[in-house]
Length: 470
Image 1 (cartoon, rainbow, N blue to C red):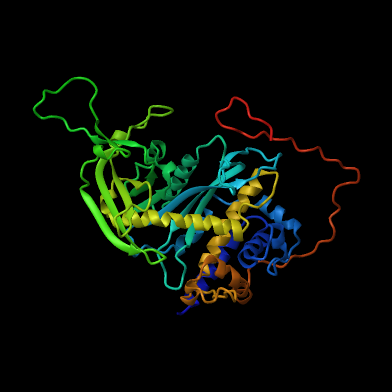
Image 2: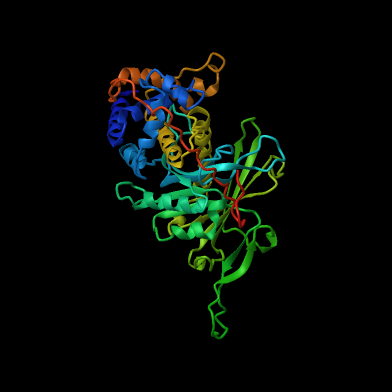
């Protein structure tokens, strides 16, 4: 494989990234390189020990305080390198939120109760902190590259007085509205979890003719068939009837025979045969809303998909089926196989969050201010994108105990393996960042200066008249 084109693309990406930093560009670029090449760091400040970072540890916080990137900077930086879909007939966007626990940051503003998976089973899955919404581009499989890659495009902190799905809807809207990006003019599919199947989120994007939304729905919801008037009956005055018979997901007696069905056999990782059955119902409706805004959902029919897995004896492998909702004007262009594959790719964004938090310290930056924390999240997304740009240049450097794994024998480079070899890549390519110029010792604060303590911030708990102090 000729890697010249990938080397040239990486150099161009790094030069454009360097030019997009308005302040402290040298420090920020070296910090991005440290994130990509120093997996040994045990904390954020430890990145100042990376060989590619030639400055003191105090410049980390100064550079993050000076970082001022536009909302679409990363998506626009990656625009020339976006891989066009070849196996799918659409662009795939993945949207989700992830928490940043900050339970002990008593002076940090706008902390609230956020989801956090418990270590001990039975505990409540909540903690105190912030949460961030991320939109990533789902990628198709490539030869020699792990299938868990995604391409992060946007990230934004979700304020406690904001709706996390509303923030995600605004991010998708920004991507579709940018004419320099291909998502608004071509068929695009967005995939979200069950929280993105509520009317407020679905209604926000229905003015986009080329966007189709796939979201998981809870197994206890009720939808409706479209009302069909009796031609023999006389027309009646009054409000028109929109909803017909109920389609209750918990009651199979309310289901009509599915007009579309797809079944195939596949083997699990342990070699057991499983039968996958997909059923689809078309032109169902959901109830709209009147408060806090009117959402006339009767104008937006959707396709309902039910996915079940059975063993060789015909017994269900899971207690409940997987229900998916597919809404959009061009939803008819998606087959049941497309819908299944698109939702299965949603879990790749979970791999991105896990890698970011374990290998890039995405949620470990400790600061009493909100703005530098948000800047750190943007920088970690940029670092991951730079690792993706180097996926075809890196060499697999497995640990001795992992060299015989099937993925490594097949040279499937994961983000971890690219990060392990990125130091060599930087040494060969060089960096546009300038070396630091010592300017003497700063005088610092005058003797006797005493700063006032930062005020303690309250933890914001929604639904309560007053918030308790942390």
